[in-house]
Length: 434
Image (cartoon, rainbow, N blue to C red):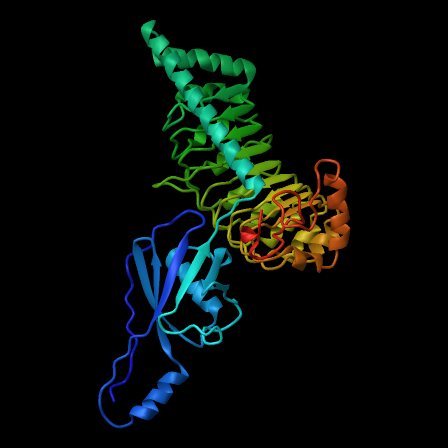
């Protein structure tokens, strides 16, 4: 008998979709057999490990893949994540009105040829995430308005026959007098030469919301600079003048957020970052940074570190040397584990880790980080029940309640959109009744 075989065809890539979408999964078996001897034995062997053809339909796109009936449902969900981009933690498979157990095999779940499964997806957001997005929208609207105001001023200048160079020279004089240089929202691709002669007088510089792909090394002329904002540009690691920044002994705030575009992305931070030893606040959110250099441990005065919305897979253990760190935000990354050395951060008060891949937390963080009272782990494959079982959680819970009990009506240990332990009350809290 001709050997039975499974044929898999893969369709075009699935476009990303929003929340609360359904995917119809159809199981089909394609087998071909011929006439001849040995039919019964071949049939028995095939029944022992039946190979199913999975047809995953999503909108107008369709994927097909093969899967053994002995495979676990969790394996199937991982394959669906690769095909659809929907993380396993956002998947909920339903067959004939029943939610399938992720720990069981397809055979144990009695999934038969031609069975149809429904994949429910959800990307529900916490109140904090919604609030952050609203703040971003408000800032974008304010930036747009400032741009309109600036263009109107330029039009007035052109009517009075005042050239942009003369206008910039006048502005440079004012910047030198007040110590603040602002060239925000001016569509600049390079910083103007008028800046460098007044560099020693500037304490605060805002070059955000432009089109900068690189910053001149002449930035070292800003020897007294304390705060530098380079957000919303098109900077890469090579475009940032790290040696010039290292020559600024008074620099305490560095903002590199939103340097991500179709052609230019900030994917890494230079080891020269370790030279900024007086830095107190580093903001590098909404980029494509995949690795945090170990030299960050040299920033012993750092008390705020914002790494939200990057692609960081692990935090360096050297981060534990940042003894002054008060707030660490690493939400929306790809963290699957935390280094136990973080327990040395005795000044840490706030730790934001939402939307990662964490399945556990080192218990030492609860027992040794004695200042910690805010820990957020929503949208991770870990539940509030698992956190409560960790050593030291009771002491942390006392600190947490003492901090927030005076600020809000508590809904402790309930699947609420408000105050909770910092993790989802259940793995599928997104489908809990509201």
